[in-house]
Image 1: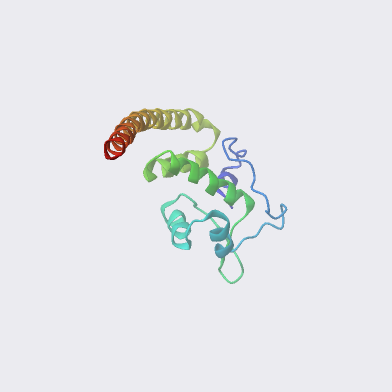
Image 2: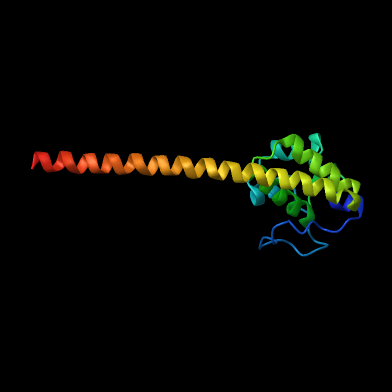
Length: 153
């Protein structure tokens, strides 16, 4: 059962499009090693996500092995996108909690994502400034290299 299945809410439309090569609904039972291969996450990270409440309930086989569904993979893709934004893990867990609480938390989710967007825009501006600095330095060294080469000839 996924975060969204625990609440009965619809799938978050922010989730990325489905990856190819997935099994059809109803046959989508993946082992932890298969999820590692699909997502690039480690088994340790997947277990940690479960422990901290980012993946609060993963189905188990009759032998106790974790079994992930396509919806779990969708959720992990969303978590990966949130990680790329630089969102703190505590905020990701808060977001997961809000999703589990239901539709009445849309406002809180909106505010959390809006604040994260502002942080991303600030980081982009910093990176653009850093890129401009690097471009100036690269240009300086390219010009200096050409000047040295022409002096030697």
